[in-house]
Amino acid sequence: MRIGRIERMWAADALRPAVGWKVWSVERDLDGARLRSVLYGDLWLPGEAVRASCRRVLHSEHEAPCAGCGCGIHAGRDLLAWEHYLAVESNRRVFGRVLLWGATIEGREGWRAARACPVEIFVPEAVDDARDVGAELAAAYGVPVHVLEPSVSVRTEAVSR
Image 1 (spheres, rainbow, N blue to C red):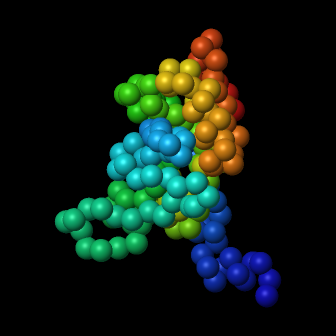
Image 2: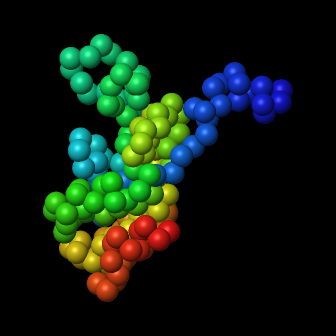
């Protein structure tokens, strides 16, 4: 079977991954640092893709993301779209790039997807024990982790990539 035929059968747009920006809270316990969703509090388990679900009680049950709903794993086209999330609890917030795949809805600011996993993490110097957190996140998630120096602007560093 040819790739083109497979793509047509499975809706080619849904198969193409996107890479976007995300902000997380850092949670630390005896096992080390872990990423947690800022909005819904979901733990991003190391070695596992996050799977989206809809939590809106008023809507009928559906797969996430859904065009008529705001559900799905959100990622921004530009980190500046998420800047306000970095300002709150800045001693516990990290950011990074995520790979999004499965059903994916593209919007003006970014994407909502069915599945995601981190591919790169940045730890601002404002995070408590930033170097230790960076090392723990690198060990847990197995992706590049960059601890930003105090002189590096989060806006400049992230946007220039």
